Image (cartoon, rainbow, N blue to C red; front, side, top):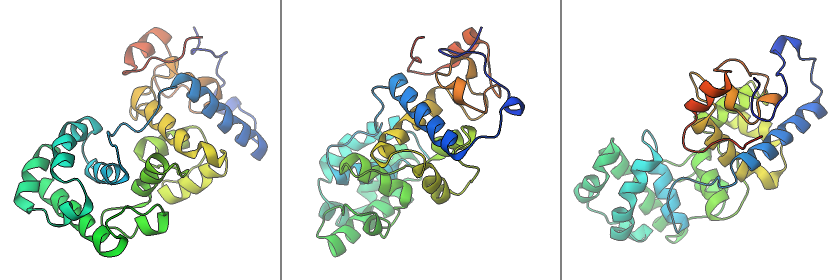
Length: 249
């Protein structure tokens, strides 16, 4: 049997050298196929405002989105704006954040974030990358999450899943997130950047795992030069898939 929706996948050794045009076309084909596989792909952190998303993203370091989402309702109700975070009692904030781990450091980061927003941006989250990355605890990854999902400004979010899949797809060979962002951005239309990020992250969490990907249940196996590094038997691979099933053939 062969992967869902594919013919027999070629080995890496059998693939001819790929032209730049071929790489672009393959990257865009993978993106289109993942759009069909994950029509509901989105940010998995719950938020209603740019500030909520910014805080939730900062808090998501070294923990799961599920755990963050279980913690933020109380947090957002207690601290509705940047001024509230800036004036927060560290011990009270730490108690709310305790389930996330590293709660003292995260409390300090959120208070510092609130103060920076109040002092330099009138308490509002700035809709510019150059401004966002000046905030404490905010790098390009967090900034692009906020820009793409809270402001509708296209951005590529290079987390561990995105980087892993971009390398497996042959879109980049770099381990440097900034270079990965740049090289992938040159392959896919800018308007697709935010959704591409969601799709790769969803696929990385559900199918293309770090240690043993479910290659036999992968909807883009036909276009993946790394096909075969994981489980290729369709039934065993499908049993490995988490949460969202792949698109049927």
